[in-house]
Length: 253
Ligand code: GTP
Ligand code: MG
Image (cartoon, rainbow, N blue to C red):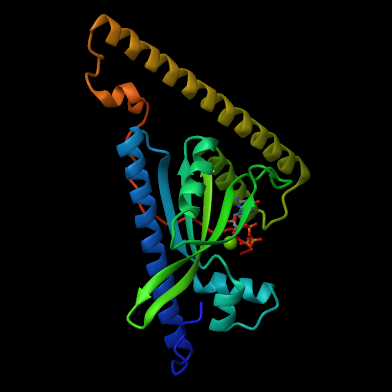
């Protein structure tokens, strides 16, 4: 991000930057909502369960810069930190994660800086999630400002695990006894199994639904719900209310 008016003092620069990051979050949320709605429109299926977003707190920004050994100033905040603006997208199935990541990456005004795939390569503690750091232009009167946003995409089950791990990390100051770490890792394996089972169950339901519709069409009887959406499988999902709420940060950030 190159836009920080030089004449501003640090407080003005800070306010101006937070305004830009906040605007980037708003734009990102609209993009995600549109993608989800279009998906529902075309396939009668919503890949997104819900979306949370947050701006990093001043305390967290200062702490992280210090931890990185950087001087605390607005330049380092924009250059060194990639997660001042963060969005978390929660989906039902692992397959949805890659589809959403792909849909986001293909948007012309989004530049993917890097990806960390903790689903294909989970962290040793069992953490799974798909991370992308992207830039999105925020259009100000002086022109567009490419602004970094960290996007985390995970399933409901992965999110459940991560919030418990986050709480434990927070409560125990990042120093959990080995037996708890083992338990948590075992839970991560259960999360994997649950995700896989739920996916295959959903596939079976969709298949069965399609067969039933075909049979009914051949017999000339209507679907019990009486609409085309049911045939496409939307009876399995409900429309997503994309609510923008805050997500907690990891204690050590
Ligand atoms: P941070 O400095 O923690 O932001 O990590 P990073 O810059 O190396 O990026 P990474 O992609 O590894 O992690 C980014 C974010 O993902 C973190 O700030 C957390 O919100 C989340 N995250 C990463 N690892 C874990 C984990 O082990 N447990 C939980 N609960 N969240 C994690
Ligand atoms: Mg972070």
